[in-house]
Structure formats: C-alpha cells, structure tokens
Image 1 (tube, each protein chain N blue to C red):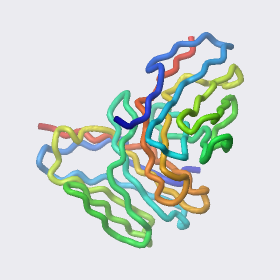
Image 2: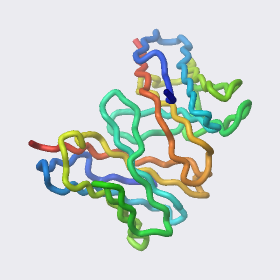
Image 3: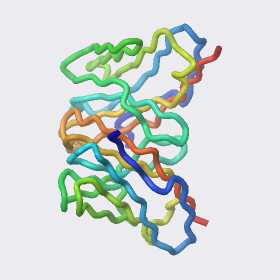
Image 4: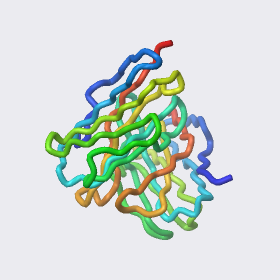
Amino acid sequence: DQQVKQNSPSLSVQEGRISILNCDYTNSMFDYFLWYKKYPAEGPTFLISISSIKDKNEDGRFTVFLNKSAKHLSLHIVPSQPGDSAVYFCAANGMDSNYQLIWGAGTKLIIKP
Amino acid sequence: DGGITQSPKYLFRKEGQNVTLSCEQNLNHDAMYWYRQDPGQGLRLIYYSQIVNDFQKGDIAEGYSVSREKKESFPLTVTSAQKNPTAFYLCASSLAGGFSNEQFFGPGTRLTVL
C-alpha cells in the first residue's frame, strides 16, 4: 500500500520554463514533507521541506505547495535549468510512521535546451 | 569536510555469501539509516538506529543485519537469507530520528549477486 505516490515517472520541460512535480499521499497523519533530488549513481540530496501547518515554502527557484484537503503537494522550479535534470523524490513522515520517512517512487525530470 | 562515506561503490557477490557494506559519517549525527532502492521504486527502509547500541527494523529487514557500536559507523550485512539482494544500497544520517529529520545521504553501494 503506497502511502506516498508520484504518479508521473518522468517529465520533460523546456529550459527557462516552469517545472511542476506532483506528489499525493494517503495518510492524513503525516506532519512533514520533504523533496529530495537525486543524480544517477549518487545519494539523494535534500532540496526543500514543508510542515503540515504551512501551505507554501519558498527557497530561491524552488517552491513547495501543500494542499492538505486534497492530500497533495507540488514542487515548482522556476526557471528550470539544465542542472535540474534529475530524479525528484517526495517523502513524508508523521507519528504513524514513527517519524521515519516514507518515500514516493520518484519523477525523472528532463530539462530540454 | 563533513559527510557520509560508503564503501565500496560497486560490489559483486556470489550467491550464498554474506557481504558487509560500510557506512561512516563525521557529521556527529545520532541517527543513521539503511535504504534499498530498486529500479522504478522509492527508497525502502531496511534498518535504522537512533542511538549507539540500539537499532530497529524497517519495512524490509528480513535477510539483513546491522550493528551500531560507534556513533560514526553503521555497517549493513546482506546475508545469504536475502532472496533478492541485487540493488542500490543507500546509507543516511540525521541529527535526530524524529520530526523534520532532514537526512543526509552517502553516495551508495551497488550490489550485484552473480
């Protein structure tokens, strides 16, 4: 039973445009949500996070939006750059998971020049 | 500089052999984790440790064992009981194991069973 779902295995975006990556979750007890970026044959690196008490968090080109009623979050990257090409993972935790991260399957983002 | 090291980067093992993957961190983090990644899937938690000399099973602990004798080190042994051990293994650490635990990852070890 996948508690965190990233339904798009891949996404292709033109350089300079906005990239929007989506993530859905089923557990309403999740408290905290994180986005990680991963290059091939490397470990993931933390990108941005959001607490369930907020609906938006911004860090430079990256913004995460949380819609608790829809159990949906999205990561916006604007403008998209070639170095943004990577796999993006959404993760969540809460009391139910003993605060261990539950991960989505990832979305591969390809930025076209 | 601070970080997490995993060795080796690539590892080949014959079926039926145990193998140990190394993970060391110098970030002074209390919590450490082992994950497994398979193609097209998210990371799945094998074991985690929130303090020295203590560890807990994750979602897929069967066929694996760990130890946490030192704060800096959290080795993972893949035993012959693990039915499908070929995968990419990731070690991570965090300041604490609770709420908003941003985890820092090592470069990973790709294990292939021949």
